[in-house]
Image (tube, rainbow, N blue to C red; front, side):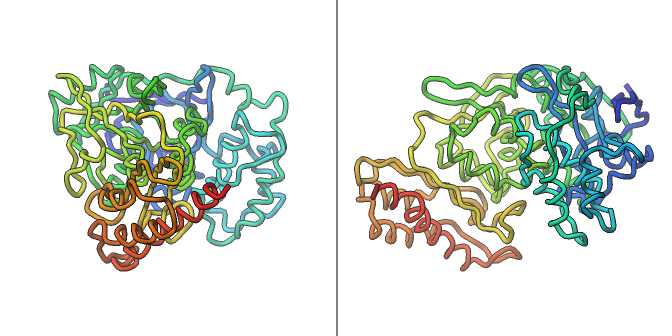
Amino acid sequence: MDSISLTVNGVPREARDVRPHTTLLNWLRDQGLTGCKEGCAEGECGACAVLLARPTEEGGTRLEAVNACLVLLPALNGQEVVTSEGLGEPGHLHPVQRELAYRGGSQCGYCTPGFVVSMAAEYYREDRPAQEFDIHALSGNLCRCTGYRPIADAANALGGVAEGDAFAQRREQPAPTPQATHLTTPSGEFYRPTTLAEALDLLAAHPEALPLAGGTDWGVDVNIRHSRAPITIAIDGLPELRTLTWRENEVEIGAALSLSEIERRLAGRVPLLEELFPLFASRLIRNSATLGGNLGTGSPIGDSPPALLALDARVVLASAAGEREVPLADYFTGYRQTQRRPDELIRAVRLPLPLAPVTGFYKIAKRRFDDISSVAVAVALDLDGDVVRSVRIGLGGVAATPLRAYATEAALTGQPWNERTVREAARVLRGEGTPLDDHRASAAYRAAMLEQTLLKFYFEKTAQEVIL
């Protein structure tokens, strides 16, 4: 094929001469939909936010906000997009637009369309109480001149969805399904297979191909570093990678489920991940980012590896020759290097059950939300009375790879769980890894944060519980 089709603001459109690395943002602006803007090209500012129609577990549609600068246009073949222009028009403003205008939530206006889209996504969230608004839905939208108070005022003034609202009614209808796609252009090829077997056959034939899930990391490379893959294989819609299954001795999480989907489906049943989710980038990013993608990049500062290491996770790698399972602690082999072969995909992540009863996740960064960590620490603790039966500690940002703090775990295991033991173990933790000086933090600061984080875990999470 030499074109793709998608629905934009309710109107079918055909995109011709599409290149594999054309972003949705650039194509929308070429179509005259300039409410969608580029602010950072990294998914941090939210100026490019749009709504995508995605399926719910019940067969309806969920309108989710994503960063258009990180979405490759060919990945949307057959899909449905809503921009800020499609929500309302002069004389017939959408309730979100009306409240922003009435309460002075816009000044220069550059960021406003993105805020409108993110607010609309929360406005139409299916389980949102009529008079409540989760202000963290706007965590991925930045405003440099208006100030956030009038924007928050507008968000908090929104009531329930009016009867007969067209977008509310759209939620009751099925969402578009992923369409088989194969684009061949002088600048590369783009595939969307419809089954895992097809995807693995493609990888076996083209080991140089790039598997694409949420694109929140690759999209930055495309925009900032102008990276180009000769062959891109979209795997985010593969049903075999989108399951979440509870078994007697483990929970298996599909590698292509977005973090927002995982959060909804787990519903707090894995407390350590429940602590992680709000600190993983922004809602805009979590609506696209996947565990498979976060592990696949092999980044030493990814937020999920420390938590998954503490949970003793295993990675399921699939190829045309079969599957194999690798403990996450052995999966990372070097800086952005892993055991995954070019012909393999991460199919799922498995967490053994039962879970450790006391857990904590700590992210040290310059901003509380929507930032890259300088240090990340996850702890999973199991006590036998007042003695440590077992403990696992995952670390990020202090070495070339995410790692387990084995020396600290050994210093705690079998010891009484008290302040003296923890202080001695915290000094051991200070020496774990090989932290470096960089623009985010010094090596000395990172080492100090490791020590302080274990003390914080003890006093915040456990000392009070043990006393009770």
